[in-house]
Length: 342
Image 1 (cartoon, helix red, strand yellow):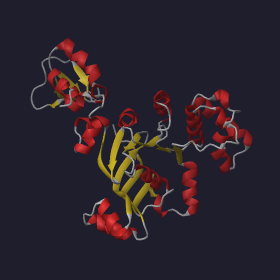
Image 2 (cartoon, helix red, strand yellow):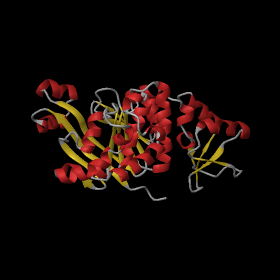
Image 3 (cartoon, one colour):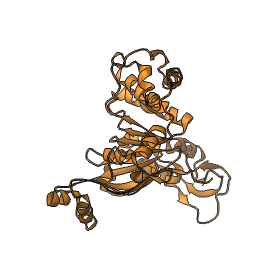
Image 4 (cartoon, helix red, strand yellow):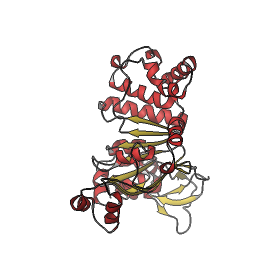
């Protein structure tokens, strides 16, 4: 299977707040920490030499604590914040080199953003809030209301078109914000902690809603969160930030199985390992003959499903990739150790 094309690519991206950003970048490259740069020059290094790729149709989660630089990073992608150095490529074109007209076209047609605070117009009905981006494009009222109605149905709010935002719950308002982003049919959706202000139950419902929509729409998503469990639930890939840098990036199961350092390990300590880890994470790669029988499990089988299979067979099992090719073996001991955090 050929890899999916890259839709968003950050290359050696920096953002420094202060009058002489290049000076702060040079200090950082010579080994100065974020605190050192602040103390020496008064500059804040918010994003530090960040590189990553987002493939078409995937959810790429950027996770970090407050002050880690994750929200500044996502604003650099859309140039709501101007990068100090590096590149942001959208479908191979550098956003940093675009003029105002080109940037406006990208924001209107390729990118859409969903914020933590819903940003709805209180004096406009729900349907007009959803249709706002289409109105900016110059679409006629009948056509934009038709499109807005379709998207409201998609997010489960078809009966609320003529209500005002203050008549809706927080979760419903966030659905309106999501519908507004989807109405312009963007290729790429940027989410800046969209669910963090919601109650836990509503938050889980919105996570499930987003995963359901993603199955149908297959957009490219960059999702910012400070919640590691949310990152594990949503992310196809996760990047963990600290002091403006990405300290580890990879698939959720890779990060939980092999944290790069103590900072990452602290996040993984309470992870639901049996739900996150898969056979590929704990298998022993093939080095000799195949097991005697031909019973096999897929490499992406989660441990919570693998445990009862191993209990029934009571022997090491062959692990195969998506093409059916043998890649390793897995046994009960490896699975139990992994679930136990070893």
